[in-house]
Length: 337
Image (cartoon, rainbow, N blue to C red; front, side):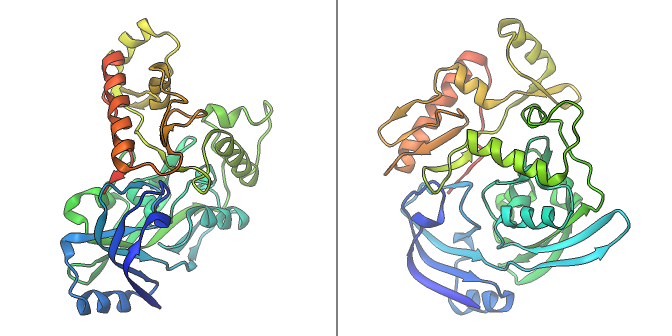
């Protein structure tokens, strides 16, 4: 079924709660009806915005062209082997609903990614990650529709070109590629991942939790540290954790012995952006309707009627402050429209 709205307000369609209007808003769970609608309405392919729940975007313009919102939510078990299960899921399903479904069926891998806002279709685009894992590890393939040509095809995990909070889908050259379904390869005999320190601390030494207990622990941690977008406008982590050379990290550790570092790739380490921002005094900062969340400096928030300009202005000041103090340039994790 397809629904088409004109001059559609997007304030409820982005978790930052910013005002913008879509000339056309198309919501559908049917590929053919979507392609027919695009042809019938003579859509400008250069002015498409593909969104899930809008949890990782910042709308910086008052008007956008055509918004496509997939709402296909079917879950299908494609194949079961002795150790694994292959599952296809519609892009429109809420991400945490899907994680809850996998855990309730005893399929392991995604439990550490519990409560991340967004849709299943957005997960591979952003290559979401948290608490010691990222979705790329569990994605087998992605079904795509090229809205500019109506071509339907499948990309393997390698073809998705996953990187740290990155994928092929973020390349502007592929802006017309709509993720329609995602195929996951999950464990039937789950081995829990407790490599993340905060998660490990949730359990007694020597205790081996199951995936349901890990999911519950992740949810507790996230709720204690991060704001609910339904209550305070935000897009989760606003900045990526910077990756720097081991040499630069060593020099910084001489000045800041308490600075946390995490192995990334040979010769590089990852620094928590939230720690850098907090050291610069921004945690809990508020100016008018924008601010930095008091419990997590990595999250910028809209306390009411903030504008995109105010959010981006605050972000620029934070970036400049961290660059001046640590010589590290933060990059935004969110996508600015």
